[in-house]
Structures are given as structure tokens and as C-alpha cells.
Length: 136
Image (tube, rainbow, N blue to C red; front, side, top):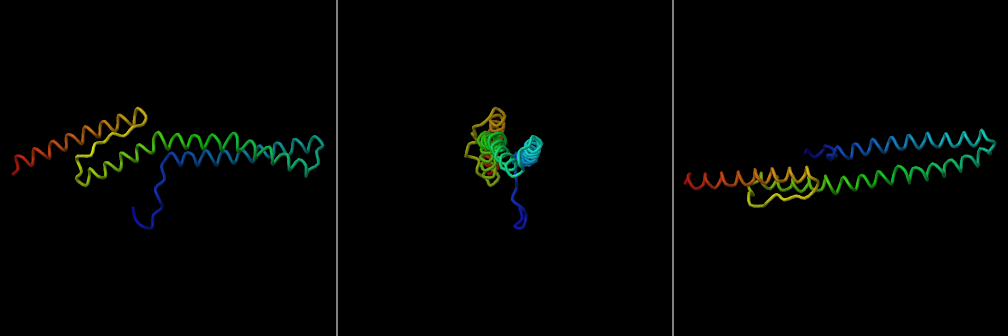
């Protein structure tokens, strides 16, 4: 990655950004619904403003932000962290370290990916050893 480029952002974080922006738009809509419903029922605008804002903040924090943070935490722990481990170990492999095993833990798919890379590492290591043995 070049020095001036933006830091890579995972697709999962991009999805969470979209969900977050959608949640904010929904919060604005909820605010206006609460506000105009109270004003139409005779509540003074300044009081309706405060109650609508308080209700909207409560809904945003409990329904939108909380679940988004929980989803982000789950994605980080179950998918992104194991993928980062696999990527780091593959970087070492590409630099010639064929002795460090790839044993990342995670979801079923992550473990299957790690197992496939481990088989590839062992095959490459065996091939390199055979080439050194018969090439000398």
C-alpha cells in the first residue's frame, strides 16, 4: 500500500457503516414522527421537542447503536481476527518461513481455510526439501 493511500477498510466495516447511516436516517424519521404527533395532540412545541429528542436518543442507543456494536464485536472476534492471523502467517510464508504452522481458530469456514493453507504449506515445504536434497 502506498504512503498516501487510505488505510484498507474491511467489507464488514463498510457494511456496518451503511447500517449505521441507515440507523441515523431512521432516527431522524422517528424524531419527526414523535415531534409532529405530540404537536398535533396539543403539546407545546418546546416540550414536544424535548420529549421527541429524548425518545429518539433512547431508541437510537438501545435499538441501533447497541446491536451495531455487538455485531461489530462478533465480526471482529470470529472473522477478522482469525483472517488477520492467517494473513500474517502467509506473509511469513511468502518470505520463506515454511516451518510456522497455520492453525487459526474461528468459524467453520475460517478453520477450513486455515487447514487448506496448512496443507499447502506442508506441500511446499516438502517440495523445497526435495529440491534441496536432489538439487545439491
